[in-house]
Amino acid sequence: MNPSAVADPAGVRVDPAPPAVRMLLQDLQQLPGQRPALLRVVRVADDPDSSSRELADAAACDPAFTARLLQLANSAYYGRTGRVTAIGPAVVVLGGETLRGLAVTMALGLAGEHGPLPDGFWDRAAATAAGSRLLAPRVGADSGDAFCVGLLREVGQALLFRAAPESYATLAASCTDGGLAAAEREWCGWTSGELAAAVLAAAGLPAPVCTAIAEHQSAGGGEQQSALTRALRGGVLLASAVSAGEVDDATCVALGQVVGGTVTAAAVRELALRTAAQAAALSATMR
Image (cartoon, rainbow, N blue to C red; front, side, top):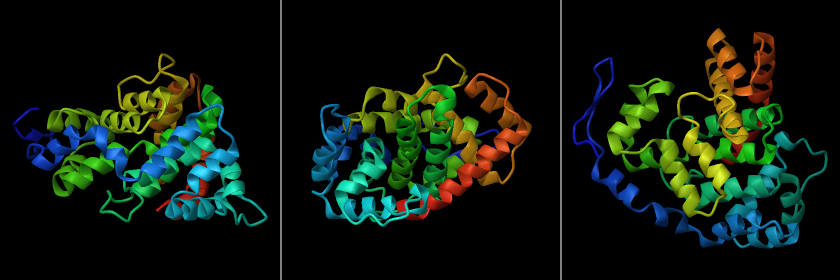
């Protein structure tokens, strides 16, 4: 760990990672254990031999999680005409991958009830999840897994922020998205994607999900990366376009690299509009 302060090109200096961050990094294996019942949901969701009934039984062991699932299953994002009132049908509507992602965020205390989160955390999570799912068929990724990695993409940033709110906020504000990973590594020895991957692996999430989150900040992004990593990179681009309220040439080029072909500005704008609409239906429910 570099003991010197981090400086960005504009001259902003950030103090070295404080003890709370060092403790966070030392305790990665223990972090997901705050809600053992939710980790059982992850294990059941990852078992190819488990049934929807077994998944519903696992989810029902945590009342707060059950309430969150029912709320999400009845959200506008899923567009159901009838109301879902029982955990079994809710599990069928949402799917195992979505349950897995939500279970981990709650097991880590990131549902908003256990401390501060970076500004706009759930809005970005919803937009990235929606955008990643929209792009999944274009790159050959599983849509459910794409939604899961989009939802969990900023887990590392949330944990670093919660450990050192002022220091991490200053660090993030001093960097562009492209430079944040390098600044994080200089600051604490890890990128937020690597930190998230380590925590998610400890929670029992499958290797492809962890790898996509660990790698999505790396340079490149062409066809040499996994389909799931590319779906996540595309979801991040769409979420950024939604946040900026516009689609520029750089976004079109970058998205073309993700999908392995030319993507027109009109096509990207359409994807961004769909991402924005779906994110709006998701974000309020997932806070």
